[in-house]
Structure formats: C-alpha cells, structure tokens
Length: 350
Image (cartoon, rainbow, N blue to C red; front, side):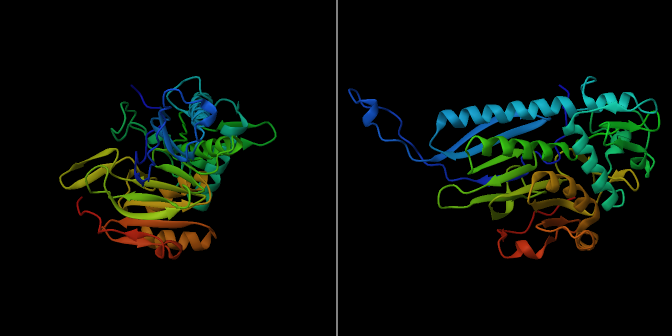
C-alpha cells in the first residue's frame, strides 16, 4: 500500500503517561443517579493518516465526548491528506504538479497557506527547506518509484503564488512539489483547534514525529520522551515536561539503510541531493506544530553550529532544539537545558 506522506520519525517521541485505573461496573440494583462520576484519566485513540499513526490522548472524564472528538480529529487528518498528498492524482498538490509549465492552479486556503509558509521557510533557510525536493523522488529508493532527475537548487523561486486569485503555478515543466515536510505540522495544529473547540484543554496529539501537548494531566505535566536514534525501537535517552507547546522530531533512523558503514536515509540535503549527515536526530519545541515541523528538517540538515546562527539571525523566538549530532553528542539550546532530563547517552552507531 502506498503511503500518503513519508513519516519523518514515526513514533519518534515516546510518552510517559500515568493512566488511572477506573472501575466502571455498576453493582446489581444500583440506580444510575447514585453512581459516582468517574475521575478524569487518560484515554487514548489511534488511527492512520498521512502515511503514519495518528494518536490522541485526552485527560478527561467524558468518554463519549472524547471518542467523538477523536473521530473528528481523524476525519480532519484524512481530509487534509486528500488535499495535500502527492499519491492521489486528484489532490490539489498533484494538480499543481500536473500543470507545471502550463497554467496556475486554484487551491484551497489551506493548501495555499502551507505552500506560502514553506516558501517563507525556504527563503529564510537559504533553500535548505525546499518543497521542490519532489524532483528528487526516485533518485533514492526510499519509496517505490524512480525518475532519476535532480532539482535546480533555485527551483523554489519557480513556484509562483497569486494571493488574490489563490493560485499556485510551477513555471517549468516536470517540476514538482511535495508538502511532506510541513503538512503534518499544519494538520496537527488544525486538529488541536478542533479539540479545544470541543472543550478539551488537557491532551496530547501526535502524527508521526509531530506532536502538540496541551495543558496537564491533572496536577502533573505531560512528560515527552526523545527517542534514542541508534537504540532499540521504543527506547528514549531523554525526557522533558511539556505544556502548551509542540514537539517535532526529524531522525535518520526511520526510512533508510546502512551500507559499508554509511547510513543512507530520506532527509536529503538540497545542496547536493545526498542524505544529510550533520545530525542523527533533531527535536524542536515550538509554540505550534506548523513551526516545529518545518524548521526541524532545517535544524537536522545544518547541525547544531549552523542552526544556532540561523536561530539568532532569523530571531526564532519560543524555539528550542535538542540535537544528537553526527558524533553522537547531545546539544541543547539554553531554554531546554534546565528541563530536559538526559537519562543516559544516546547509543553509538552509524
């Protein structure tokens, strides 16, 4: 089965959840009105969309409302997937690609907003974030197709937006874009808005490596684990409390292979078309998932030293990063140093 979007770091963030046990049986002869309302606890719902697992954890005593809210979240993820995937020829992104070099394509407010933001991040990162990376598709066998072409490093300048007409135009034939590096973050933020509109303010929402954490679970903060990029699956090397922020992880361990001691993976450095090797993994904490998702790839490609200069230059505020670099060293921005608990060093390996 083809995947709509490649998961950059499926289940990269492992969670430390305290789930309260709840007795729900009603003794024989008891009247419903006399049954005490159960105390809030964590309830969890999982589905699949955008090529990855989508999970919602809610701290609530309202089981029915939680289930309905989770269904609304999954429906929203799938709706946005249909708009922005490259696997469905009827999607807006596929229509943009099909019309490359021909004519502008009118798109929804949502697709336009994601492409507009992607172009802004591309400009600010000097092209390291590049949605025209779609032209690399097939060069590396991380998916099931092959076309052998490489993009022009300046290709993103050939993506023309018309704000008045809400159109997107690719100037050159055979150009293509992909929103796989930013759309999940946008979708997570849309789902967060749905949950809050339904009265839920204490929850976690995750799609692959993109997560948003809202509120608390009772008197405790949610604690998020950062995956060990070379350790066994489901292991983490650090944890941090998170409240009303997003966490996004990009790692080289999810889609790729090791050959002759070198790891080849799906996060490509647009400067040379090769897998980026400055980092093993990067986790970004930001005020929203849209921001964290887009910039996590840039932070990964650059590595700690270059990234710190960019963060300062672009004045990225409320923005913190954890790197495991190419030498397996952990680097942390100042705002996380006091709260990130590193349980052990990351596992070494190529």
